[in-house]
Length: 369
Image (cartoon, rainbow, N blue to C red):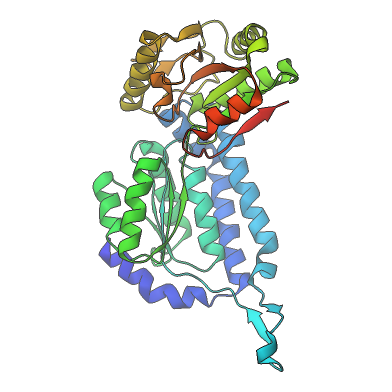
């Protein structure tokens, strides 16, 4: 790690002075490699998460290519100096904003979208002329190994390198004085990353999760709300940082809405929830966490509407919807990050707003009205 870090440090100023043309050439080379490896990318994602080929392409490959092309089209403009007004006490002078490379970047990626969220921050690093080290998740081992292969084919290690390994590798990387750290993952680990960054005054980007609420108001068009909520909640088996975490529905619409949610689940995934297009849980650790959360929720009075099937051998949890009548139910203790959707009722919107604001700020929120 120290050798790679030192080599990138020696190359840092050279990369920072590269032209837009040179950086665009590197982005094109990365794009070509992604296109050439599409089949292997989908295969690796299936082995790690059980993702279908269609889902892998739509949610990881195509989004990444779209971002890459957007950056490529705009990079020349972004790199230009931008003239701004000079303050009156500096009359006669000219002032500019000049954009410069930050320096060595560390990218710590998660397992839920392992390909997309490893290479998306890298696009920004390449565009900015920064050397980068990627630490992909050890939980998605097949995808991480493929990322290492692609990066080795496209880049010199003095510019971009991939470090494989577990927690020890992440800890060793965080001991180094990177100029910028980009972390995607849980709030708990985000705190540790931020603490490590503070030791070196490294700037940091944190993309964390949270319990993202959904409000279904009294005048919402329920069929559309149910369809969209079920799709976005159970896409990637609920393992999405912006997935709906819980729903608040107007009490007068409760029965009608729960029926529609149940119908949508059956239509999308079948009675058993074992559709071939339905992703699996990443590993036994998270399977056990979700099973424990579900069981404790039921013990504390939650009503099972549909689902609740847990197959440890296949790491399969069927799309599960609960009706919960107490706001201190165990299901509200942590971000669910899995295919369990609790539904609560409220009497008026002020009550719903108060319910949401009593909790930590979420990454996203949704309202149907």
